[in-house]
Amino acid sequence: MSDATPLLGLPLIAASQAQKHVTHNEALALLDALVQLACLDKDLAAPPPGPAEGDRYLVTADAPGGAWAGLAGQVVRYADGIWTGAAPRAGWLAWLVDEADLYVFDGAAWTSLRRALTALQSVGRLGINTAADASNRLAVKSDSALLTWDDATPGTGDMRVSVNRKSAARDAALVFETGYAARALLGNLGSDDFTLKVSPDGAAFATALTASARTGGIDFASAETALAAAPTTDLGAAGTRRVLVTGAGRIASFGAAADRERLVRFSGAATLVHDPEALALPTRADLVTAPDDTCIATSDAAGRWRVRHYQRADGTPLAAGAQALGANGSIRLPGGLIAQWGLVTAAEADVAVAFGIAFPGSCLGVWAQPVAGAGDALHAAQVSDVAATGFTLRTRRAAAGSVAGVGSVPTYWLALGA
Image 1 (cartoon, one colour):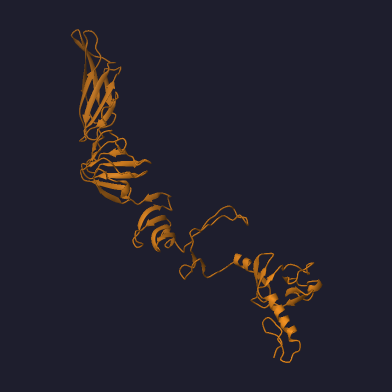
Image 2: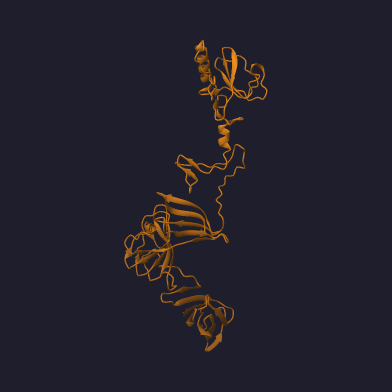
């Protein structure tokens, strides 16, 4: 039989051997050297000066010198004033104290485990604090994860994550889940457009927004939520940007949700109650809605709502209370009637006057009144050639029994049409 063990080469005691303790102690010394192997260094080509009893080294130099001559590629140990070596076998592990790294011998050379992990390539699966599987070949269980720019190589300072797909008909997206059930999808979903989809159950998804790959325009999907008119009609709780308010109740508040914007449509004659601290209206007075009237309402950081714009369905303007009218202007009255007015002072007795806006249908009539007069003179105004776009104004002066055209007479006029 062999006189040494096949793996570590420990000497065996023969049956009739004298001084068996010598062989036994030699085997123990080898075990002491090789078990829990921790070497001080692997980069020396010759023994260090003043070694301590039990010091171990990996001799990786091709032609080491001094007492290490002939021990190339071996694990050497200093004991009893001499260096002895042991040839490693594939699979041996050694801790390198000076590098704080674990090395493995592959049968030909010692390889750093840290370096091998740093250059990890083509791993079929990787699970960090959890198990990866055939579908999720990279799995991470952690409260957070960090991807940062490369300041070691160094890199460019950029940090980009690429999600690549086979074709535009496939998905390249992030999936956000609750209890492993999808609640939101974000990315290129079956097209080149960038899309956000949300779901209450992981089965049915609604598109919230889409950014066009061709134009860059953003399209917000906006369903209309119906709310019944009530003293507090909570627009902020509707969950959609568009809200339909139904019924004919009195509305004193749109709720307390802060920093919201809503596009509101009314289906009945609800009454909006003006309150500067809760629901500020453009009329500064209560407002009665009509079917298909619309408005834009916003709330501030304190949850106070303001109607920024209100549009009547029939196009008529809001009654804004007492206001100062200019010398020239127009107004659309309830029911579609339009009133226009102006002041004319022309050098000629007969002058063509154009309306500020053309009446959509026709002008129903024009009335004029001069404001000048002197002594026994009497001034009068006559209207002719009335059309949807304007009319002719003629000013006359009567004095001493005669009538003549006269210019430079300030004359106010009023026209009604539809």
